[in-house]
Length: 405
Image (cartoon, rainbow, N blue to C red; front, top):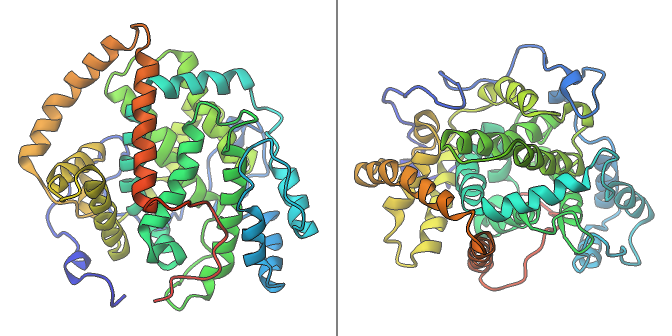
């Protein structure tokens, strides 16, 4: 912990405001109540009722552990480097157990609806501005206020180079939001499976770190908690902002994330089947898993610094970035993350944002506007990846160790 900034380790002592959409009132503690979310509301429609806190990935974990025992991880990373497209055959030379695992788990679930996935692609095209802000900045700020996630990021290999860590996370996020996400020429199936292997590697490696204490990381509940900081949080915020959305668009947006959860190894009995079920599950698992940590405060500072540097190389925009982050999350999370207050910019954003939403939504029905909006959003995504990777090719790879320091 010595490397953590003393300034950032001081947790705010002022009164914490009431939470808005998340519904929390006190700093988080580990959930102690029995798992009560009904599997009847899941994509499976039924389930054994096992508490997801104590469920990990019974398929991926032994395969990845065997790769480490055999010393094959570096060679596997080399072989999978150029495996990118959903329809691309696996390279020759992979260990048989890994090849079998990937071939089984690169397939869409039987309940995947191609029509909904295409509708979701069109929804992403017209709503990219909101989704990029909410899934990127907003979701990032929520994730640093999840103690288990903040600590697992900080002490795993990714914590030593946050630009690289964010770039690799963005690869999956951008793949989910791409127009061809689950089409043959897309990359979401590949990057989901690669991320699942990364999760298994972190579960194998992080308990060996002298800085890690507690349960095995990235349980099924941990993935669900993070999942709710993405689609569930984003949909709630867009409804709060009065963004016009049809029922079909809302259902399609949920569906692309349902499929992604399955591809990441979440059991179907835990994947919410409807928005009502998703909101109910979020209200159960998110509040008790959130709170402040020194690691989360440090990561927040790094992430906001990166965002400011992306938008203004001289760092001039950091006050605006702070204000935007505080606008996207509620007062409690902003205090936990110790996001500095920026009264002028906070007031400006609160005033201007509803006007911007109304203006933008008035333009969306016009010819070519969704295509133009998508082009601008895609250019921004590519710029962010270029900035984070410093122009070097970056892909999701299995880590070979923990944070070295």
